[in-house]
Image 1 (tube, rainbow, N blue to C red):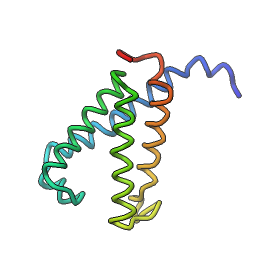
Image 2: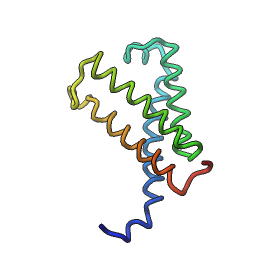
Image 3: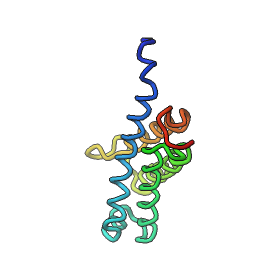
Image 4: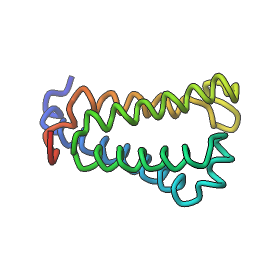
Length: 128
């Protein structure tokens, strides 16, 4: 262990939160911007696609700004578990998938959100 790095723990969690936020805000925006096309690509209704996009945007803002970040992270975990279920049970996608589009990416984002939830977002948050 390198104990000197521990002083940067909260900064590391902040960077993790920002990365998760960027991933979900862009995904959510794609859902909301063109729900018709996006709903066809994910195999969901247009209304659910709009709901999903809105939830992703709201969760990403909560995680990035540190506002109810534990609830936001848990909500984003739920979204990703739904994506994993769809990839495994419906699309029969393997862990690595074809051309790198497996559910390994989704599982990694679940782990990132678990880290955010259990650390309560670190020190640099707006509201707990």
